[in-house]
Image (tube, rainbow, N blue to C red; front, side, top):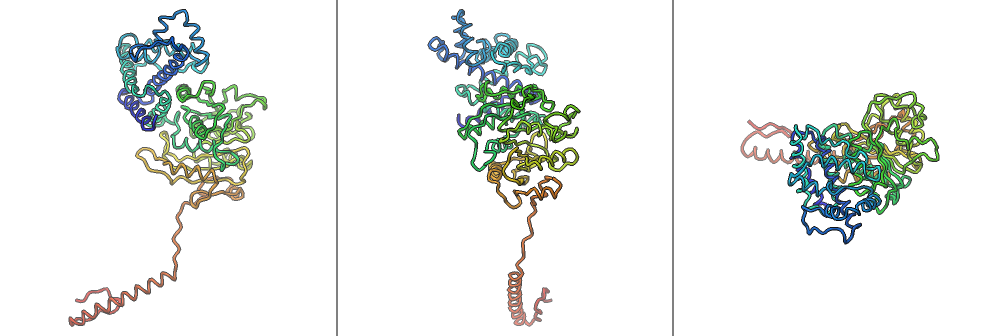
Amino acid sequence: MTEQKQKQLGNTLWSIADQLRGAMDADDFRDYMLSFLFLRYLSDNYEKAAKKELGRDYPNVGGDTRKVPLALWYANNVDDIPAFEKQMRRKVHYVIQPAHLWNSIANMARTQNGDLLNTLQTGFKYIETESFESTFQGLFSEIDLSSPKLGKTYPDRNAKLCTIIQKIAEGLTEFSTDIDALGDAYEYLIGQFAAGSGKKAGEFYTPQQISDILSAIVTLDSQEPKTGTKKRLDSVMDFACGSGSLLLNVRKRVNKAGGTIGKIYGQEKNITTYNLARMNMLLHGVKDTEFEIFHGDTLVNEWDMMRERNPAKKPSFDAIVANPPFSYRWEPTDALADDVRFKSHGLAPKSAADFAFLLHGFHYLKDEGVMAIILPHGVLFRGGAEERIRTKLLKDGHIDTVIGLPANLFYSTGIPVCILVLKKCKKPDDVLFINAAEHFEKGKRQNQLKSEHISKIIETYQHRTETPRYSRCVEMDEIVKNDFNLNISRYISTAVGEEEIDLKATNARLVEIEKSVAAATAKHNAFLKELGLPELPYGSKKSPP
């Protein structure tokens, strides 16, 4: 699908969402809209696999959209259904009953013939509980089809669902043959819903422009960024993955360079957002065997896999990206003080878990890996426990790059943020500072980083380029003299120096001006003399009476 078509599909679906949600909050309606889009994807994928599996036995309905081919096959081949579903579980890892396929649901919505609400509930539950893999368990748990936000009475809610699904089906008609486009449409809608949900957007969405910077950094060779994007990443991790868009951006960049990723890992505390992430992965063609998203608290480390005590079995990742909640209040306990993740650096303060998130990710970074994390500027200069953590990271040579970004880039906050790039083994002894805070395009609601701004940041990091008032490599001696304070303004001045004055050239210009004034005065006095008026003395600004 062309970029123009993708944009058109996104606009069509957003127009439907904006038109139908009525008084419902954008983030409430989001869950319904995206779940139905996901059901459409699962159905298309399932029917495509079924057609291949059944071959000549797959019914031909002659383009009649009112008939669902698989429903006809089920009706005529009752004895063969168990064997068929066993094969489908083996090949696509899930089963959808014909009555729950998108085309069946869309037909029911269009004719309003039957109990759509109950059919959807049954269909969602079947996909969650009857599928072969655990990937689908609880996937639709946050979709409340009995919510009064859909309508006060059961018939009202049923009618509302019919209208929503009918409109989505109509909007998707011209895009029906391109399953891959649904992933981009899903991502577009997540962005649009984020724009409409204000502060809540920070829970699930990293703006694409910032996502592009992080994904570019972690996919470049960690030791020799100049050599370009790595062709193979065994694993990539985001421990505060939200809707998974940042992880998908890393995958997209590696694929674009002709490379591959072994497996994608994510962790998310919010159940609704966790479900969004799993849907997002599948919608982008990431097989359920190629990703693992865990629902749980990162700071207390609820994921069993991450608590492995045997160093030989401890999980570690080639690339780690993260956009954790800024200055999140947490409860640092005595047990956490002894936690292997924090033991050698100390605990982040109760008022701001920024360094706790950083240390969690850094603990699981491979020796040859690279980590890029978005944090508030305070981590660069705040004192106390944060200063101690920052000092140790610097002394150990783990902070590679500090990138200052413009303010007001996020939907959820207007504060300026920074990107810290960390490595366990890095070649340069210095720290690269990039001050990109003044390089943006002002927008009505959010500021924007244009492609040239993004490219400049990435290229500066990649080649460790030094540019006046923009980037500089700072030796550790200077950082030590500044008491390990990483405030960017201490190392890069954005002030424009006063232009040096060439006194010799200036004097020559003044002499020429004096000559011109003298000549003009003489000429003026000649006219005054002819008129019998008193002459002006040289240099006078008065006119004759």
